Amino acid sequence: MGVTAKIAPSMLSSDFANLASEAQRMLDCGADWLHMDIMDGHFVPNLTLGAPVIKSLRKHTKAYLDCHLMVTNPLDYVEPLGDAGASGFTFHVEVSKENWQELVKKVKSKGMKPGVALRPGTPIEEVYPLVEGENPVEMVLVMTVEPGFGGQKFMPETMEKVCVLRAKYPSLDIEVDGGLGPSTIDMAASAGANCIVAGSSVFGSPEPAQVILHMRKSVEEVQSSS
Ligand code: DX5
Ligand code: ZN
Image (cartoon, rainbow, N blue to C red; front, side):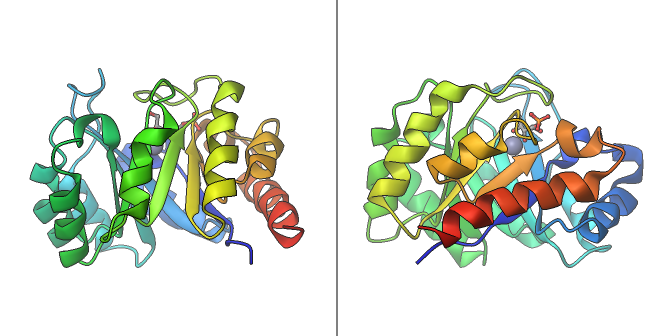
């Protein structure tokens, strides 16, 4: 049984001054989720948005808001993001070794879907306990660039982690993020990724709907033959 394709444009590449209309434009182009990059200027050297922006956006859309927490203290963000209307809450394993169980529990109690992300240099084994725990995460985000900025080059060497994960967990949502677009999607899809984040390739295209469709087809082809 395959998993479903979820194409998630990264709103980091959108015009932040027009976030609501940019979100709607992506949904009209066929996006399944909206990927929201939350950075604290500490875990990564960039500062983006937080719960107040999610709360404002939520007033304009019912879409699934896939929040990627690039922050040093994810626990501090659970309640405000849950109250703001976030849908997914994906924290980084590198900063959650001590408290991931508490984090997952709280994320679920706020009605959000818990996910765990890992940097390109972090070994995949580090997420196994979180996927296999009695209160498990429901998605693993394999970063395909160093987190922090949009527009970076896809790192093909991260695909090995996706392959290993897919072989081990056939029905897990596996997300990839960074440098995804028409020229890299086949590598990610054939490795087994089904949730695809893409910023610059979608927002930088004159035909974003075509880019989204291309990526969806690539994932669906692989999943229907698995
Ligand atoms: C990077 C972010 C990504 C980023 C992806 O730290 O997590 O979501 O916006 O952008 P592209 O698709 O341009 O690499
Ligand atoms: Zn992201």
